[in-house]
Image (cartoon, rainbow, N blue to C red):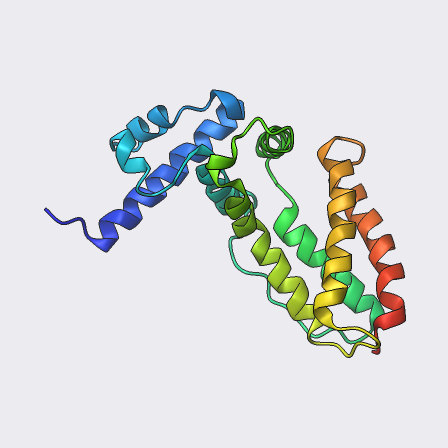
Length: 200
């Protein structure tokens, strides 16, 4: 019997729902895909038709449940320099802030494991994380493309901003600053970076 598109969609939602519950209840390492499959009323092998591995499932769950809203951020053309900086900070906050404290802790633990190379490369982590990050990349690039730049292009400027955000994010990841402190520090950095190149 052929499974319909609607049935696949229902199964996917069930997997994500039960994965979310599992990641909220247990540490990342203790979550078992067999338990998620059982709760979703499917065979464990069937789960792999939807997700390659646990890290990929976690990223999909994180994207879906990290905040109350699941809509794409609507990018506006900045009117002046301050609104440009604020727009970038709003994008970061929209996509990176995690409303649930337990999910935030699990996400940090997940990234620790990844950076300590305790998650093997066969888990396709680069691709999974790119899915999570692409929304941020696209929104920031779209914002930069809406303004006039001097002596550079939006892609080059984006790469500089990205490295600054990544550096400050490490401080947040390892508990040196809270999320609000992360946003404030990024705002200070990108204000200095953008000012020479922005013509609005």
